[in-house]
Image 1 (cartoon, one colour):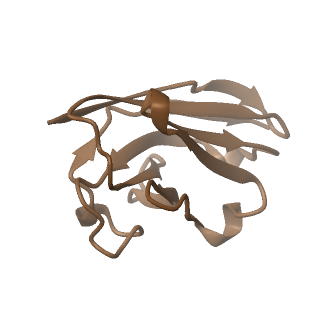
Image 2 (cartoon, one colour):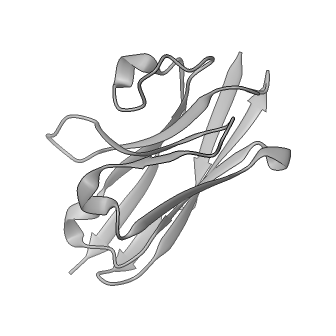
Length: 125
């Protein structure tokens, strides 16, 4: 079993930055995918970014590709999401998720086995 804990959310003005962290504990995932998703009020949860442990490949939701950076520190079992030039429409609860083994997809929710509780990000205009 893997436990994921997100941190780093908060209130920020438009144009600002936040760095989210996703710390894993329990059975460490040595060969897997970690992704970030977000869910705004009244909307479905959507993919934001993901990173593969094996080769560090990264994937992004296209609109965020130029503003967000996902990275990981394997020694710390932590994945980060650096979010820059934040916009009010980025307001959402951000969740990290992990796959116990790579299923060939990083974009779909059901590919992930473990989920954190989420961290709120609020961007004021």
